[in-house]
Length: 218
Image (tube, rainbow, N blue to C red; front, side, top):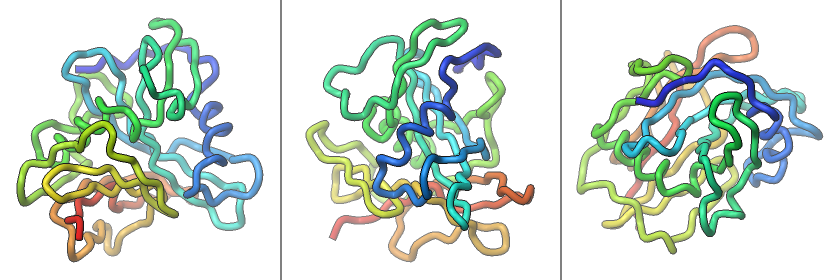
């Protein structure tokens, strides 16, 4: 299980995201982001080398606040061939220098997200070591969900990022989050799998919605 260290980060995760988010096609802010952490969860790297976090942040620079899902990986060395996915580096008070990547471009995170969707791994609490996050739910039907070859492109849309899979499927990660109805995530009719979770809204209430959905490729 991943160990959560109580230590300092320079710069902080939110400071790194403040510089990176405006470059994303799904960013809806106006000017420099005003970010706050709103929730999220972690996954374990089976080899214990890569930190994996799905961070939910709210952003209040525009008239209507937006909520983003930002998958991140933390590595002790640069990932070969992934300069385009590098968000930045930070100094960790215990682990030293860490390279922070857009997790949608990191094969370790993608593989573990697919495993979570299938039910082969358990989401972990964002802030506590060795503690499952039971609030994160999932479902899946169909053939095994396997990441596509490394050369397959990751596609950013206006509100999502598509992660290609083999056997005619794609996993659509929702970058801009929307609350469901009556406390439940709304699953698209054509979805064969999903991951859902909860986050804090700026007014102090709690929302629940869809984090990712699996779709067949037509």
